[in-house]
Amino acid sequence: MTVMQTTAETLAPNATRTDICSAPPRRHPRPDGQDRYTISEVVAFTGLTAHTLRWYERIGLMSHIDRSHTGQRRYSNRDLDWLDFVGKLRLTGMPVADMVRYAELVREGESTYLDRRELLESTRRDVLTRIAELQDTLAVLDRKISFYGDAGRTREGERNR
Image 1 (cartoon, rainbow, N blue to C red):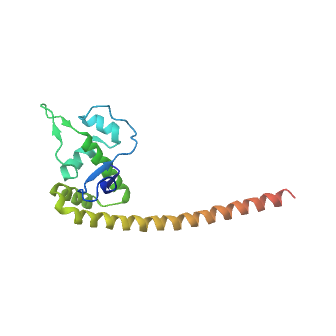
Image 2: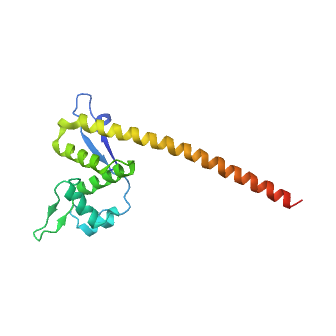
Image 3: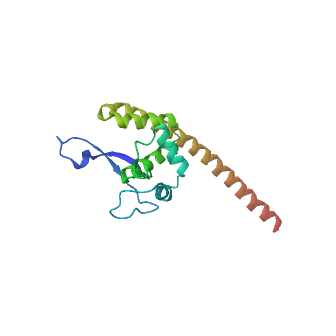
């Protein structure tokens, strides 16, 4: 899940708003009609390690993962969507504790929408600050690259005389 979207734009004005996952094109397409995956398949789909997946489960970042009759983890498409979303949260720089808190709020249900929104808005502000810092850094790099490019051309011109 890359983003949580509200379906308000597709619903009638009096309809209930619900969260849905907006799935991106996947690096590793999931087999059609399949909704149960082993940990090794999830590793291939997500690029995460088996150790990381088990750790996410231990710390409460993943909700309960179903098990086969032999005790083997069986992940669902919903679990894979959640892992996609967690990956996006990681990219924002959100601390793991905040990601776990968000997961707890999701499990608590609709009554936590406001808390979830506040947490995501705070993260969004942090991301915007980082983007501004990176844009400033990029401008400095561009000036340096331009300077060295100009200096190199001047130097070549002097050698060719």
